Image (cartoon, rainbow, N blue to C red; front, side, top):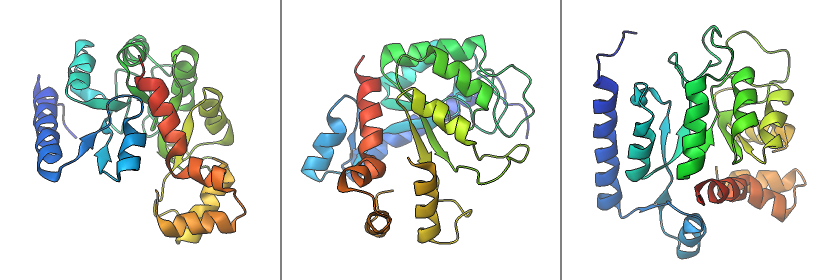
Length: 234
């Protein structure tokens, strides 16, 4: 790794935002920007995206850039990623910031104000505790797995306590179909263990586990739609 030059991360993000613009136009996609947009796309069988950014390094400490990416169509923002962040501690680095930083709190408040889903994936338990205290909308922890044993240092897995904290905000934990699982059946076992990808095989396997139609509907998209609508209706 190296330190980015001043302005480099923002310039890179601008190129990616432009790429999304061209993708939406060339592929005939819809952007989900407001409550009801995801349901409308589902009703119309129209391909749609929730435009997201993983990690807020593009900010380079400038809070006003949250408003800029919102104007460019971003409606889902993951606060931290693998790189050290001035927003808070992540799971794969030594925690040195006490969880969520003052700038991290400001970013969450800005997301709440503008209408952006707050994603705490990669954040430490202490960081998520800070986010849960101040966010006025439910949190998303978009991709992880629930540990079946004691957590190793610097793992991306989470404990049951960590998952329940996200759920206590009305939020959702997304179970990641990672190489941790050797099969679709193993992935479904992970989803069921967490009690929390919309592919026909996964839906059938969830039904075979005894889940109701209503619960399966929540798992394969309904939970996220609920949090999206609550977050963007500012």
